[in-house]
Length: 142
Image (cartoon, rainbow, N blue to C red; front, side, top):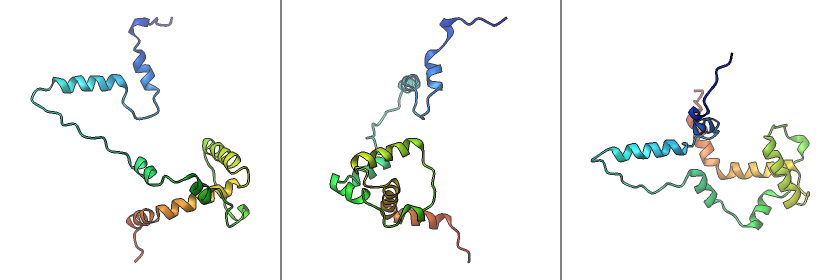
């Protein structure tokens, strides 16, 4: 015979938080941590200003005008798709790119061209970082 559980003993927050996909701290744990910190006598808390993430900083630097975006990304590639390679992309990204090409570019640009332009811009923007990381991790043969 199956064991009966009392509904009152089930912790709903624990169950909900166990299904979280991100690494954020559940609200109950944050509150408990705050209470523990307040209990410590003699220690002062110095508020630190929040640092903007690297991703936000890059986005701010690279904000472009609408015309720039179209000139950079919504143009035909210099080579045809048949000379390229097959690459798999997440379904979500594929659908998003299709909508961008279909609506913004009015179906005048292929998926291949859009992705080729985005990658060309990425490599041009981060060439120094990529080269430095590559040289760090790649040992010389001689």
